Length: 358
Image (cartoon, rainbow, N blue to C red; front, side, top):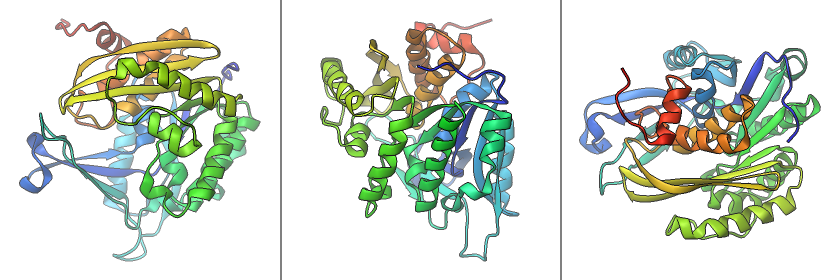
């Protein structure tokens, strides 16, 4: 792993398409509810929230619908999370024009699993364009320690795919570490398989940190691995290791490979584990039970915690432990992102210490 840059304006930068999630109150299914909770969200800012809440400088690269009250809501939320942001203000273009995406998702309960509907028609984030940002200023004059990219924004549209590719190239040029969470979505890849395979392969080829579950590695990078689904996770750790070894052969520049392990017992009880290969060293968190309020964002919390540990200069074993605990913490919030009070709170989750702090 190459060293982190020093004297940078930003510890972490994420490109993203911001939207809102609407969830029924009281854990009810959407169709049976008439009261809802709305939050600003995106996978990439879910990741960045660990660092921003714990005091590291974070910047979000995005785009907004000009004069939209939803855009104003999102900006206020990002400020409340201690995140700087920049991006173009795009004219709505009439009632059937651009808007921020809506995700309608309940949390599920017990034997009833969560249900999610993504409404992305007219999504303004699809217009993200490299020409709207000064990459020389950002990576050169200001400086960035880690650029985190997600396969969601990298596959959202041809424009965002090129945007992420240019960001990765600029980051590499200026010595910024690159983290890439593959985050495969079949609906995003449909009809663009050849194009996205090429772009994802190039980004993975210059990334320093590569994250994904078993499905992500297999479908984005074409690597054979275990059956997706999470049965007998502890017994499958060797299979995961074998898969990551194959990825390492194809992408030797990558220094860190990581993935989470999840088995759903029921909606509110999961077995949660993680594996990381750092250099030639394996680090494993054996799956153990966590109690889940809302599962959305757990994987993002894992990545955010791992990156926070790296940015703090900790030993690699602690990156994985803090990532595991940050992901577990995220599932105790109704927001898609964890809001850690301090490092001690996260380490208490790792230690299984839920006693009252006075």
